[in-house]
Structure formats: C-alpha cells, structure tokens
Image (cartoon, rainbow, N blue to C red; front, side, top):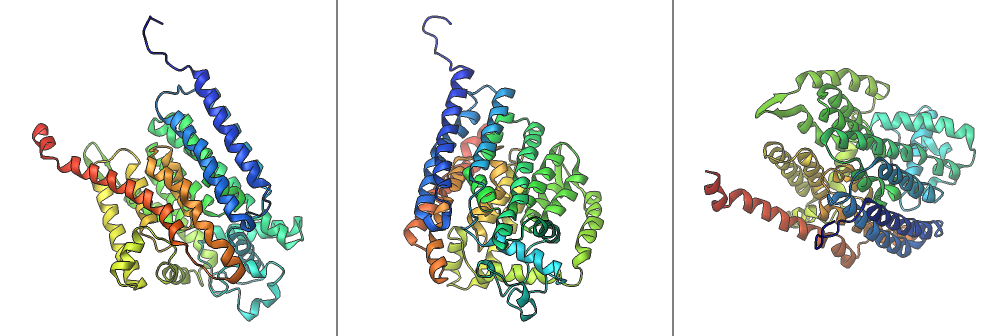
Length: 458
C-alpha cells in the first residue's frame, strides 16, 4: 500500500461485521423465543423485532454496498446463520394470527368429505369437527379463500399429521412446518435468480436474514411461502430464457394464492432488442396444468372469487394508498376497491412499458398491489421480499422493518374480538415509507421530464 492511499477494508473485516450483525440478530431472536407466546407479549415482540432490524439493515448494507467482496465462504455462513435464526424460533406458538388453525380445519373438512369451497366452519353439518382449537379458526362464516394447490396440501398434510400427533393444538403447530420448508425453497430459488441476473450470491442475505421471513414463516407458518416459492422459480426461469416453464410456474403460484397473477403481464409480454414478444405458447401450456389442479374442486371452486371480492371490498386493513382512495370515495369501500383496481392496472401498464432495470417492473407491480389493496397484513410484505435482494430499495426495506407495528391490534382482538387501530402507531408505520417513496418517485419523474436532460439527449 502506498503512503497516503486510503485503506480498503479487507474481506475479513466485512465478514467480522456480518458476524457481529448475525450475533445481534440471534440475541434478539432468543429474547423472542423466551416470550413463548408472542400474542401475549405484543409490545415486547414488536420491540425486539424493531431492535433486530437495526443489525439486519446494517448487514444488508454491507453485502449490497459494493464494498464487500463475494465469496463462497461468505454465502455458506449467510446460509448457516439463516438456518440458525429459523431453528431458534420454530418452537414458538403461531399465535399472532389464526391462520394455521384454519389450514388444519381446511384439511379436516376435506378428509371428512367436504368441499372447502362450499363448506363453512360455522355450518351445522361440520359440528363434529369442532374441538379445542375451534375458537382459533378464523372466518367461520366464509368458505376457503385459498387456491386448489394449497387445499391439496392442507388435505394430504392433515392426513399425515393426524397419524403422527393426536393432540389438536400440536397439529396446529405442525401445520406451519410445510410452509417453513417452502421458505427454504424460496431462498434456493432466489440464489438461482440472483445468478441469472448477475447479482452476487451474497445479496440473498436480504431475504435469508430478514426478520419478516423468519417471523412470518417460522413463527407464524403462513402459507404465502408456497406461492412465493413458485413465483420466484417462475422469475428465475424467465431470467434463464425459459418463458413457457416460467408461465406454468406462475400459474401454479396463482393457484396457491391469487396474488402472483400480478406477475403474468411481465412474463407473458417480454421485450428483447427493442421488440415486444407475446408468449402465447406459454399461456397455452398453462391451460392443462390449471385444469388438472382445479379438477378435484370443480364443483365449488368458482365461489373463491366471491370470497376474494368480499375480502377486497368488505374489510379494510391497509392505511397506505388505499386509505387515500377510501377518503376520496367518502368511505364507500366498493368504490374505493374498484378505484384501486383501476389504479393497479394502470400502474402495471406503466411499469411494463417504461424503461426500468431488470426485475424492477415486477417489484414495482407487487409494491403497487400492496399499497393499493384493501388489506395488507404483515406477512403480505414477504411477497416483495425476495426481489429486494435484487433491488434493495431502502424505503421498502424500512417498510419490512416497521410492519410488525400492525400487530398492535392483537391484544384487544384476542380479548374482545374488536379490531381497533392506534392512529399514532399506524402513522409511524406508513408515514416514513410513503414519504420516502413519494420523494423518490418525484425525483424519478423529474429526471424523465427534465428539459436540460432532454436537450442533452438530443
């Protein structure tokens, strides 16, 4: 090193920095583990989550700033730490939401000969399925909102679990394991995607170390991980120039939960060398796959659209852009929901046409969906999380750090069944994110229409 030259941090220094971040994250996760039941200690859970987000964001900066040299050893240790984080919290009760109890009930009703798309938990016909977990089953007046792929998983996994464990509450806990495993599949698919788009493998840390993925898939066991695994596989296949298989994969993802359909325009309409290409053969290949997976539920599956429409226009759990649309529509949920749908379609068209970096349109489309949906529960943010490993936009990473504030409604909901917001906490979650996104969007629009830039381009 010459005299007076700046000192460049070594690989060892960066790895030590990552190690310190990993230890801090693990310490916070151990503190969460000692809570035993997060829903009984929501303020403590949220505090520990916010605290561990500091070393997490620091680790994201270390690997994505361009200063840290990538190495196989670093990738290996990133995965080891990610597995440690997950194993640490997997014993916890999935108490912050009621979803795993509902997954089990969906399997039970099918095993008893029912159709999940016509059977409601409150129906007298299914009184015999009521056990000690009955109070935890959400949406007792509604049929299944899930796709046929998830319903097949619910059925087959319930048949397996009941042979292994007779206790109903233990079965509810076990129902998070297949979706925890799907989270690992997301990580593997992300590695393939990063390789295909020329990003360093170490950037997978953005997903693998995220407290959001750890909490929502390994504590709460949300089934979104399965749809996400197929969606990331679709994007990886598209990046590797296999559009037909990509479209098939995204179709399977949408048959888990409907949200991956937002990726369809970006995969079906591609642009190469300035020319647009419509992947109609891939769309045709999806048809037999969709029919085959829907066939076991052919009698009642059409009702899922009624459930989803009611969910989109009957209950609000999103105070971002949707709150603004609801204000403009004078509190009319139906008008606000349809305005949001129009705005989302317009946004997708703009993102598809506008010149943007690779995979940025897909991330923007998912982000628009989250901001414009009537409901945006914390685990919904996992939908965009893998793509943040490709484009680690700071305001979106901040959103994943602040989103557990939404769980402040849980104590009152458990005690009284009332879903009441604290306006201050809601503002703390959304205001910084929306302000930051608004500033970045305004700056981007200004660059597009800057007359000085236009003259220079000419």
